[in-house]
Image (tube, rainbow, N blue to C red; front, side):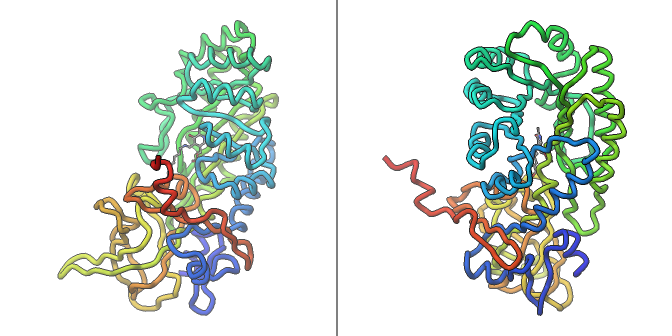
Length: 423
Ligand code: LLP
């Protein structure tokens, strides 16, 4: 049990006299002060993850661009900035957030399957480090914006390499049947004719294989294909953006190859490409294990001769990953329970059968109304995918550092729900 806690929280969770602590903060106290449901993040885990990623990839001196979509809270972004990272953004909103958090243009890369002309204009106006090109028609917009601001725009063509990776179907992004990137055959003429543009500077290549990838063979395969592509087109990329995707352990016994092995595979395959600047776009790896959804049990319900349900105050609108991907998130009681195990579905109050956080989960008994639970692995694609479904207010967010905790986003108010509808 204690060992499981360590694995799923990088050592930041522990019981002290039967009470669960995140770093030096009692989760019971956070729930009492801030209410539930509430996202809680650990500074120690965030910084620890940044260090291990930096250390693993140090031989390549990459530009690490944290993928804002995983967790776009301004305080998290500022922490990434303090750690000297750049950011990967995919929309005007993310770009504005990154600017608000203080990232300079030269530390921002912009990817996205459907950038609007306005978004491209803004990206060029702010002199971003690089724009990923996923569609030949984007080049016209980029050229126009470059001419408008008299700024040569560094671009990377995103290749769809048709590399399969072992992850959920919805987050595989480099298969032919997905909308992302250009087929290498389509990219060849763009590379060959790249000098016809005055303001577009095709300086490199990009790929992103998918998310929650647990072993590095896909990266090796993709990099070999990129190498072939470069040999064929005699293109020497100045930059090579290999996306994100590095997985994390959601289950205590889930084996994910250490980040150093991903780094070794990438370095090994890139041997001899000394003129290429590597860009990484990790999201989940940096924030996933740092976040927890703190929730209170409202009711328990046992069907005669059947299932037990634990009905909590967090729901699919707060953490949608189980409902969309059937994903597993480890659940731990805040008050240590020593009874024998029980099996239950942990569900929320939303009016959908798909509204669950865990199915047929074994938990230490008893679990009673009023108890607090935490849902682990919620730092990435947790709050950032939250919605107001069922007119529920999105939760507040709290950052813990040692014995201190602070509110980094307030819980929404009911007025926030209808503010834009009043006239
Ligand atoms: N770069 C690009 C171009 C991406 O599309 C993504 C994620 C990333 C970087 C960051 O990937 P990461 O390192 O976080 O795996 N909502 C899903 C994940 C969607 C990922 C979309 N793209 C989930 O909750 O599992």
